[in-house]
Image (tube, rainbow, N blue to C red; front, side, top):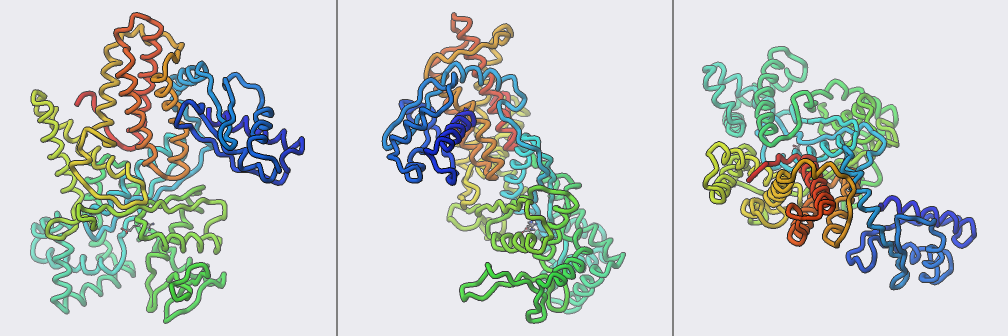
Length: 581
Ligand code: ARG
């Protein structure tokens, strides 16, 4: 409907331009908002106020002229002018009912997929030297919700897990692995089972023994020059680390698979060529022995241009160089139309720099959309980055276990008679969904405080609230007879139906927004509001025990679409759902 009214407005503008009322040169941004108060209709625009000046008219007068220029329409019952010159549209309820019927039959539930694009999503991307910790939670969860939503919109999505599998710290790890192996295989296996400990132990050895440190350095050089033995060792280490990641993805329901891994090492061979390409274009400058690019738009506080280091003094290619190679690979080889990076906001300058350089150097064509979907930090109760009591980083596996255990206690209190296995399963779904939803529902760019009690609450904008709402709708639907669904005509008879119905029709706009802006939290807010409107509807509108067949069937269809959209929305967020709780 929103799209429809926008088109009506556009056609009014075109005809007013022809008549000379509005100058040809202005191309106004069309704002059309849903009204909060239904007394002001369903949609409202400030168009007349924006165009008043160029048209040299007072806004209310211009509003009337625009209204008169709107093409006749059956879908709009009334157009009003209000306040300083707002134009308010009242939608025909029969049309709402019709659109709901169509959405109910549609696999995309009323959403019209845009032109399909190839979209690369870089997410999760942990460093393999260590175990995944809470810092990787946000990227994995937000990235996954984006992937699911883009796929729903029929885009061709390529997941990329840009793991950190290269760099000097691997020398230390390989040296330690070698040392343990010389002792015996079992201790090596045991220590690798906990990568955090392994990393710390290797660091201790590195700091305490000169021989060890020398060996570590030797191994880095050997690794870089393609030495077979060293490569073998490195691959074994990475496999163990990747298996840890894969376990986490699996328990979180994150779609990433081993074949999505394209780590930093993958771009190694491309780096010298990349440097040469930048050099040929005259972009490189030597600075203290390093090969750098200086872009005018990036300066420090003192006003000096900041370097993007392409090759370090003494050789070696840093993070930025690898990321440029990855950009070029994604644009040229993967043929991406759009590339999204779901990475901590603290890397925002890095991405601004490499995006600019990629375009400037022609590594990536101008029309390719490059986006950094930055996210804020997940903090503990004290407002500081989330840590264990002893100040260590919290491992994701431990966090997931705790969520499940807490959910178990809650679910058992509520349902003491469920079987043990059912309790366990509900606790798993509730625990994991709660952690994921708490993260997804916060504005992507803000920091947030991790709070188990809040996220597991059955009230407020939480996963348990939404999962429970879905079980309630499904439960009503399961009690209806099959004949009740044979009839398709819907009727909007009161405000509760209309509000719920209108919300259901906003699903399409909501998905468009998530895709354009990369903001899964807008989908969370939408689902939360939808669940609220469902509750209100159900409080005031009887369904199953209605005598009036047509009305019962109409309401059941409304609930049917509610269930479908709730289910689909939760799927897009990567949340598992339950039949009963
Ligand atoms: N490995 C990096 C980290 O843990 C994130 C990589 C993000 N992706 C990228 N293409 N730079 O901070």
